[in-house]
Length: 230
Image 1 (cartoon, one colour):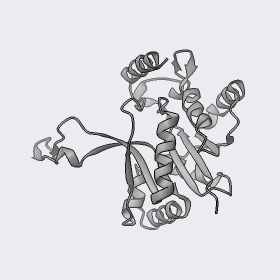
Image 2 (cartoon, rainbow, N blue to C red):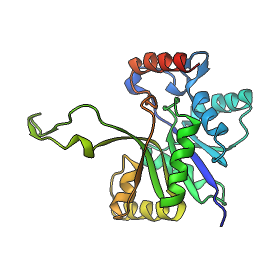
Image 3 (cartoon, rainbow, N blue to C red):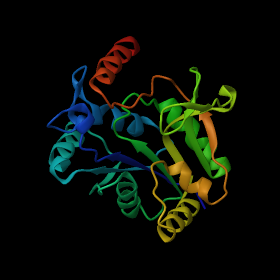
Image 4 (cartoon, rainbow, N blue to C red):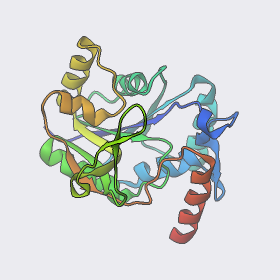
């Protein structure tokens, strides 16, 4: 069967850590809203066949307006997010094209993702069934107890900071999701679903500029990076 890759862009957060009234998807980055930067990368990636955007109900009309203004053609649907991230992802995959063979799940608040990194991680998932972008860890990481006392130091060479997209073969991901639901397992990372099945996820080294916008300082950093890329 021919591959068909559907991107699921999760953009349903409420931006509480930003201290904003509006969604961080609409923050201006060098004259363009965050979500426009994110969607453009997937629009331009030849390996992506279709895109679904998961967002808050109150943001749908604004996102639809952006899609129309920017002329994005790959957007198949917008769907409402859930109370938690895993619910939002589930809502997204449920409206993906029936031809889908692989899901590429990405945080809408990672607007600096490049077309090259998207294609690189998807190609690895087409080979292995599951792959995610990640970067090397440069700081020394400590494991602490409930009193914030150090109890161990992982070997840094074995650590990776995981990003998105995280890309999975459809049937493998659906099996992992079903298992998590049956076992009532909380999921904050899609790779963990696959790990819980005992399956392997390949890490593809991506760009350190693929940051997630979480705090106001991240906005300044993103603008600085974008300015250098232009």
